Length: 356
Image 1 (cartoon, rainbow, N blue to C red):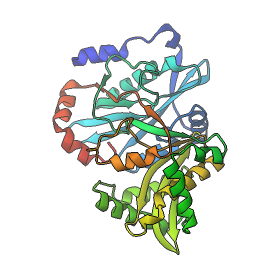
Image 2 (image 1 turned 90 degrees about the horizontal axis):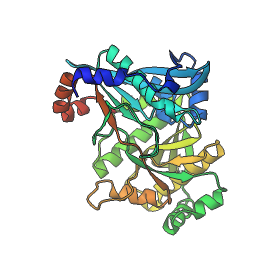
Image 3 (image 1 turned 90 degrees about the vertical axis):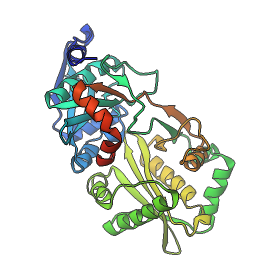
């Protein structure tokens, strides 16, 4: 699609039902979170997440969409400077729409694309929050790409039944290991201090080296503590046995959903089933704090034996979650020439831009 064609696609008038929409920059974080949270928005659309990303090289924009003075949709989008190319833009798990207002999503994304192009972005990536084939359409300029940013599928555990019923729904081996962890004396507490977070990072570094995956640097997690942790969106859990730290779990709670972002465990003491105990403790905590859903943050419907995370996915399946596949990652080339250059440099570029 040529540049002129992209512009025409993005500026084409929305349906008559959407012509009365008004877009404005959100100013009040309380109003934003009250709306986005009540509409089921995910943590990536929270005000606190935007503040966190603003300190890691991104610039957040928050747009509130109204009709006749009533809010009907909201979207937080991010942009970031890219050397020589200008900037790129990204909508993480948005837009978020009010009940029965799904039809406005296309107009909201079109508005973001116009704003992104106006600010010099060469492309806009969008990862909608709805399930594949069950959500509204996006403007025609957006095409699917296999280069996803957030996990394309996840596992959700329903926390609404009584705790005993939630536990009974797990696989028998998972229930057995959860009970074993606490019977052997595993204790879990909330990590509040910087030293607690540094201890978690040390465990995460050990886990990454053992299992062969990459992690962010310590400043990334320090910033997370100062933003998501300070706002109450993120909570750190630490597992200990006889006073010795053996594992940790970083959880967010927003809009009724608790999301498991990071987990770590020491090599020593793995026979205590640390991960099993941590996850169950986090689920119970989330339920007590009003969450109705626990998001395991990434889990494919089918696991290949060659998948480096096959063991992690098997572990998550022990909680008998409902597997959800999101609508595909899409991208609109706002400036095809610069986007072509980006596409040729993507492997290197994504290494240079953490979190993208």
